[in-house]
Image 1 (spheres, rainbow, N blue to C red):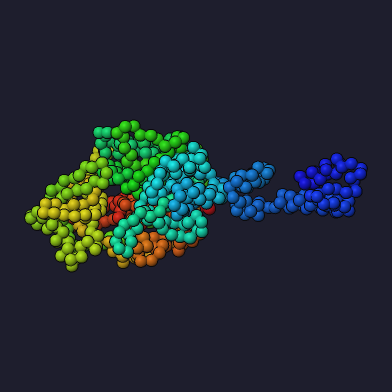
Image 2 (cartoon, rainbow, N blue to C red):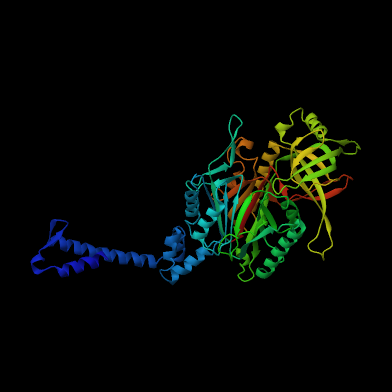
Length: 550
């Protein structure tokens, strides 16, 4: 362009001006003009040589260069010629799952920071998850939709905290919504946001919500949710069930029975993880904006459904795999009871239960104060320092629809002890029934440390599998009472990822009740072995690992 401009300028000069050219108020000799023309011709030759050199690069070298381009430059590069376009398509076809978080207290700027970070490398978004510690979910949803497009399924949720790698420096860290000061006062931390974007070839992703209408039972909406998932999978996939479900729930009494029904209905190979208690907005892939609820409707759950794509199946060598690992921290105490009288507070949010109980094998019914005295005596008068929970064994009948014969499934669910009086023991949550057996559990740092080491070993074994899977993404759902303050060191819950995949752009959230499927066997009340499901956790970290075989 410079060469063309100077050539035109020389042509319009008059014969008298041929020996001199005005330039910025100074006089430039014809000799300098000739030198400039010569340098421009040399520059053109160099530019042509550079183009020949770039065009002659082999695909491997070109691949490594294009892979490092930011998204906008990558888009321009894909239009250079057919060869470059083919290389760009190969780069875009590789699986990716990228997370980043920002502590910027300005919600809009924080959203832009994480979007710039996760979109700094080329990606075709299949799904987006945004988690914020506070603020306006609608604003975050709108900002993301403007950047990634209206056809991408999105879930935005308010969580108890976030962890992962910061957008500004890639350093690991955590931010909790509430922090406790030295004087014991609880204060609200600044706004923070975590953004996760993924592209998983061979996988079809969309959001299926659970919306409860006024008067609609948990059994009915649970059936609708399961059937909605099955119908979606039957349309997009050749498989009977999804490969993975990532769930986000509201703090209502409806979430627990629906999650147990889902655990019952899905085959063992379906991975289920998530956050049971929070707030969320969602946008399905075929919707341009967040769904507005009808009057008296309430959000219960939203699930990201990951199903094998029958229309664009990935070859076996490039198949996506989902794996989970769970780090626990709860230790049981040898105090067993049987619920005698149960009353449930059916508030729309923050449900709770009042109960009395009998000691194992005894007839006397204990009130709330007597149960607390039992626990306090066992713990040496350090009851509240230990944060006690009841681990309730719930044997319930489940079926999907009316045609299926109900089957019994046993689940262990934790309920935090919050108080007592001369009548009842008060615990968080609902769905406890008369006749349910329960045992006292306490958080145990030694158990947590040993369990973290076991998870790290499990991830290390994943790397050494014969098919050598390449891990492309990771996400962790962490109990809100864990974190740096619980372990007394930084990034403990991040350590399995940091030790095994230090370059992985992982993310995670702190939950008030983390979701993760597991099965264990223990002795029942009749001294028989009982298979017990554990889908809802406390003081745990549930790790999701996404990989593919290259």
